[in-house]
Picture 1: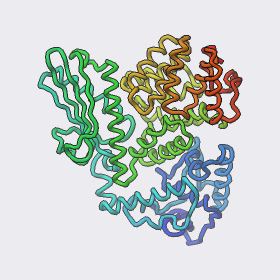
Picture 2: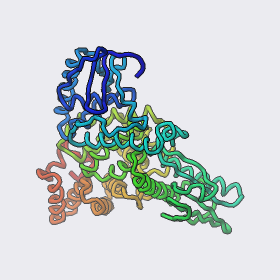
Picture 3: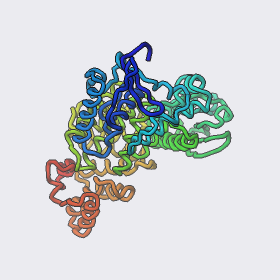
Length: 526
């Protein structure tokens, strides 16, 4: 920071704060030192309260971690003998740059950072964050310093991965346009998820050592073959391929469910390839953290969700992309349904506020709008707004199953149950080959139950449970549906499985207003 300030923070070697005349400021606790360091390394010296509570008091309850943060701030302000040293506004804490400066920029300069916060040891996730800061500076140093590595061009200056697209088709304009439309669906899906550097390639060699996605269109009479090939590191290395065959006119609009499914499959294959290739580079990027989190978000395993939330916070620190906030909101909202031990009101406020911040940052991101719609519905926000967000999401990227599932949920909330069945079906058709198929199966099961098609609801719930046994909603539906059809043995089996996840569960819980089974009650099953 430019200019002389009243306080100077040294983050390399033993942590130390000194005044302008050299007097040492005694910060009493390790967490107080870690809190100051986290603020000093934040963008504009800022961190959110939630992020700091997760970093320094992870695993403690919301009330306890919040109280601990307030206490630490009181001790810091007392140590500095200045109440303005850390400014708090709208859930964000800021290190006052008029009063405090630091040498945190050494982390971004490629300087030796092995001694960053030397001797400051705290439990996870702080230890992982500390290692990451040291690693980032080490990578900059090994690749020639910040000037060369950080600023070569556009998104690549942040070390984000490069994706090449290549289109092959005849010279016929209609086929060229169709190829462009189809490939744009994949590109939209990927760039919504991560800050990728997307480029065009005229040959495989152009994309050597990067991720290459090639689409090829061949026409015979009235039939067209669309082939998609995913190539990974090294020209000619084929990792994944799929195709679609149908009438030429169907390709032009790219509205057919099978075509949308192919676009989504290609997107997921690209995410997998990028995750593997980035991990092999042994470096941290916002894209890698975001993709890693995305692979866990739909698992509904609490440990996976906690780690995904940490990864998304780190990703946002590297590149402030709104979708990272939206996925965090998605996680926090789903915990209302999956973890009945949490404070539902707090979770709802946290999730809704994260979603609103995300919408301000990326208003044309389809994945973000789909997640925000889902969050608004789960947290009791305006149903009309949730419906508009879902409609926007399907318009911006019709190859996104979450957008269609969110639209189905919005129709349910608006009382348009029949419409929800069609949207649920489309979500399942597009996402049926994805790792999150259990999510779309469950959505289809909910819609089926609400229109009274209990057998279809049971089949979808069974499939969702088979794919992810720890996913609770299918088990709740199976218990209610087996009871409705009079199979008490099957009902008892479902109840026992729920009790493995919720030891105190009783079938009577499904009828309780505070239990997350609103659509079951609405369907007359509880």
